[in-house]
Image (cartoon, rainbow, N blue to C red; front, side, top):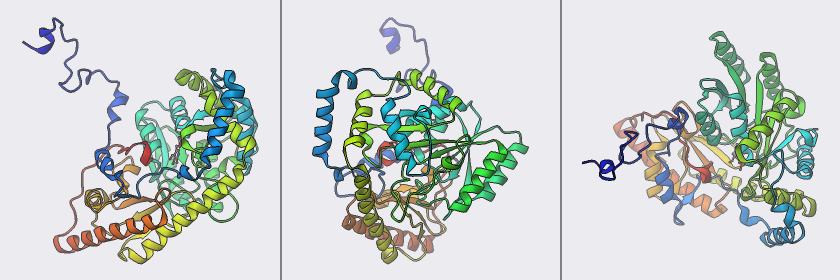
Length: 441
Ligand SMILES: Cc1ncc(COP(=O)(O)O)c(C=O)c1O
């Protein structure tokens, strides 16, 4: 007698012993699988491990007492509004303030075209939801942001990667790919790009290429989704001019307070051409009715009463010192065959291992040596990237970063010796999106 019969019920589904509903999920859920490296990262979060893996902002550097007072004051003074439902588009005053923030990147926009979202991650989800049918093509740099790849996979988009080098996305590669896809009759829905301080690439699209990318997409009628959470975290000079600044009709701009204030507020936004903005608001309402009034008003209050420019400046200095620590340590400790990018801002360095090494195979050994990174395969939707790794410098203190690189260099050195003795590590079969989880995004 089966267990179901034992309970007097006819099983309506075959299921499996682990998940009775395994054959009932929508097709789009089949791509949603926990990464096999997640378990390793549970170990990697132990204090003795130097994590160069996580993309978490260093929120400890915020004046937390001030945040506490601000939040308490908000409840006391504006509780009935802060604790009430809000509008699907977001608090109008915060949307005005967001326009001021975007002006730093040359964007001239009205609050009516802004939708406040639960982090820019939700903006990505909403954009994908309103544009993508299963099988539609999304263009994205290779590598690309793991959270975006996860969203595209969830909506069954086909991601086609565009080559990227030290100066950002390669315009020739973009033009050729568009031409090939159009010739094959594949519907391209948009280009998803992180032009400034790329995650995970650590590179920035140069000024000349910005115009080329805009021109190529405009000629082909392809919408650009410009994801820019790190734009104000540059280490030298003024912020880069956003792509959106030069083409209001062809670009949806995504912004976030996660890196310039704190991700715990979960406040991000999309700035979109009118018609798209309307769809986004409807999609937002169907997803969550409205964003949290409480965190929106808290961010609004912070912007209105605190020296936020100064706070961003102090974050920039903090991250610059950590970037320098990472680059110096890589320079002095890594085997000469390893190369890496030199970010001018943001959180990440993208390292390339010598031929024959596989970063995912190396990760367990690195964790055993008490250092962690994110293997490159997580940042491609086609299983490539095995020779790459993402190293983050945003969270550990500079001396920990140096110690982490020392440990990692030792592991890579050993791998090179193994390769020279026994040949290359067997290439692992790896397909699908390898999302390592939010703290590693
Ligand atoms: C490129 C990029 N886009 C979007 C996000 C999502 O940020 P949030 O949802 O916290 O605004 C991240 C977070 O790491 C990111 O790196």
